[in-house]
Image (cartoon, rainbow over all chains, first blue to last red; front, side, top):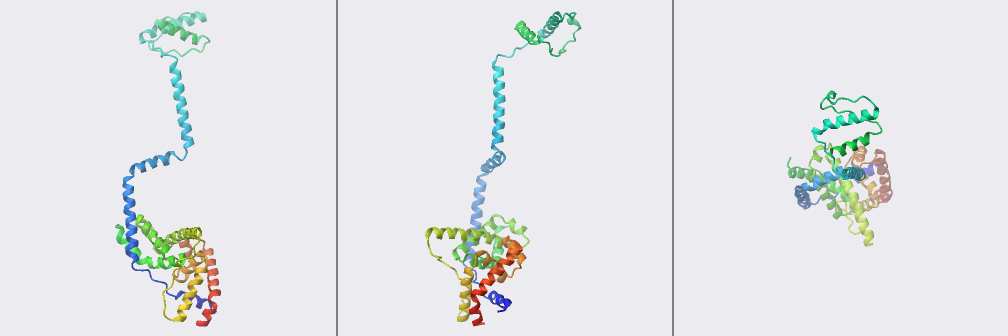
Length: 146
Length: 170
């Protein structure tokens, strides 16, 4: 049997025709479904915004949770640091006498010549000393001002 | 662009071919209608899809094939659960009064039903749509060699099944 003849014979068999009654139903169903989807879409703008946030945040929830935990820890430590007491406030007017007191105290410790406060430029901020007694000097100053 | 006129044009131009393909693939008229409806629902929801397509027929055949595969799987699952018989097997060909021709068509219809769906799809597109293997491969999203081999195996089975009747009425 010649294959080409057989193929031609098969291909000549007419297929059933599409029922004409289907046209209206198929098109109506397609357009009705689209109208319904449009109505749902218009009413869920908030959902779209919410879904945008979810898409942006959700892919890595562990990373976001870790970042939030780190911020909470930082905030907690900061809060705990301020809990030790109110931050002492040094009146601006007392700053000058404070620094001169510190200089004289340091001079006594180091047996260096005392520095005349008049030689110290106004508004200058001396670098924090790294000498062993510096922290106690601060305490001493707070006690003095308070 | 208004959706409805474009959808109607697309239906009038392509739905008959889609109907033939879907009926042969699903072997079920109800599934054929459901899938056809689904294809046009998707087109109505995304009208830009047609405008962007180089070949509308190929795009629609691909959409129809994908939807038909899902429909067949759902029906087979339902039939397994219900333990029911094949049920509404649909005739694919137009009825004809002449008895020899009718016998051949009935036999061809049954033989096509015995083919695996994927072979049947390729055979249909080759014989009744006249597509090349390249076009068939693109429509069904399969390699070119796969399209050619499925056609060859399917046609061999049909020839084996229909040989006696073909030789008799030739």
